[in-house]
Length: 155
Image 1 (cartoon, helix red, strand yellow):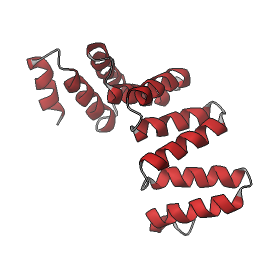
Image 2 (cartoon, rainbow, N blue to C red; image 1 turned 180 degrees about the horizontal axis):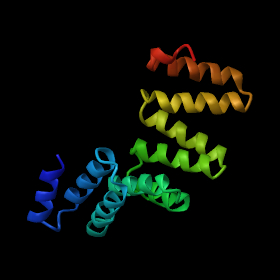
Image 3 (cartoon, helix red, strand yellow; image 1 turned 180 degrees about the vertical axis):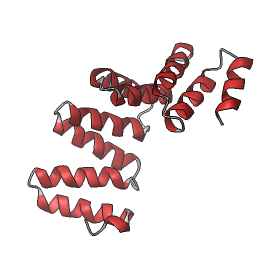
């Protein structure tokens, strides 16, 4: 899948989606984060409104520990496309790393609202509510998560 994307870029160097697509493949298939970052940056240079490229760049920055950069990239992705649940999830993880539990909880709730079958978001919300002592809401959230992902219902 990577070779065809590289061919597409060779054919049309101004096609931002090819860079964005290659970035995703390098990130997800090869774990080649430095090269994926280059591709996302090139996609953004060609199309500053490419929300998926901003999301991908945020993930790369998060993986290398640049939480401020990741927060900016995820925030830009969300600004460009509010419905991009994975950008909200990434932002939630950044908020947790930076110690902002309130913002993290809200971001996870945004994920759950955007993707009502995103069991990981419900498990994260459950854990945070339980830590906060809101056991009734935590139990309700756990039941929702367990219904979405039955193998984990015994947690």
